Image (cartoon, rainbow, N blue to C red; front, top):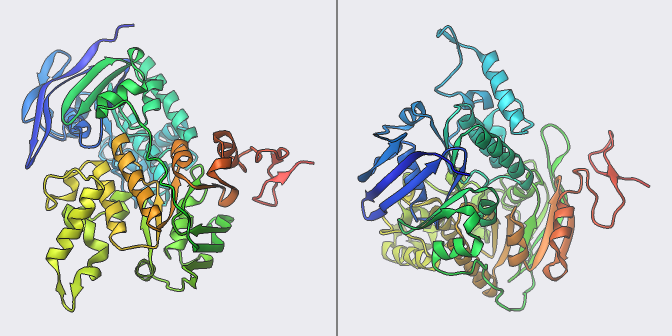
Length: 525
């Protein structure tokens, strides 16, 4: 089936201070099709999308819309031409409702005088219903988890009725069920003739929904074909010049004594029930334990409890054999626990600081002599971690926002490692990281574990938890529903355990049915 080209980029070059982001890129966008754009972090994908969305202007080259060269001066100008974008980094107002965020700057009014809140709420409700989202339009965005916020970001762009829709990592924070919903919406948009530009690091996902694919590497196009002509090995080879996407292999080493123990951890929900429901677990020095579960399973909340971020949490935490009594986050970091948060933009970085300043921010006390900062030693340590994590940056003094999303994530990881932790908590550590960067990060994790660091990580990626974990813990509805060594785990068992309490029983258990008196599943005799 042929699809008409509605937008073309020709000879696009983009130069930033110290960086050549794009080098003569040609890119075609076809109507009624999913136009996949893929490449490693720093390959130029987001820069190209910003040019199409009017956020950036090309240093050289042009954008051609319906056969006519155009200059897009901002997202509002692009929207007038029918171009909408779902950014990888969320752009929402946490103190405003879902409906207010969806229609910000485009409010529905009564005769142009006042905002028609009822009409906005109804339109927002229909959009969220289309995306099978349960929260009402008057819910504050700040009360939503990051995956739910991602759904709101998608709804905001869908409300614009764009004929060219850019989706930059739209599934990075979504559960498998939410991804399926999004793909049904994409199929519906394609049937309406909408041109979709789709960026993702999940390669199997791209093969599943893509019609055309363009691969970028270091600002160049290295391949452009119909999706029917390619497979995952071809994509990986075009991206990184190698035909393997294997994660880092296990470094064989013996585990040490128990380094972390969590006993009967509980966190009540404001609306009743428990976000963390009497969870107990242990971690040994040198061990990597993966926690897998669907969105809302309580994984992130568990990490917040361990780090002292939840004052209402009850339960005991023991670190290296001694009770962790410190109440403050700073105190727990000093004791040897570090957290890599799920949302790097809101919780992991200071946007106004440089790459180097962000990297050393949590460990400045290690470089302080009385009242003076040993800048030379700090700089040497920062450069060492930039090298270890393969952060792509021309100069560590460049702004952190000049880095791609994946490289920003690696800076967050480096910042945590520079505190010298005994235990590292990693919440979705590969979110927004491409396949090459992911292998580098996982290789570092394996080496740190071999050196005796205990690592507890949360992931919604089944491949990651199966490849990287020494032991797997599965959570659902705030509870641990299964725990097993990697050697005994299967994908089917892990997925089934993650769905316990969602109408599915644990493997080998009788069917379950919900009861009115308890949040726990009741076994049917």
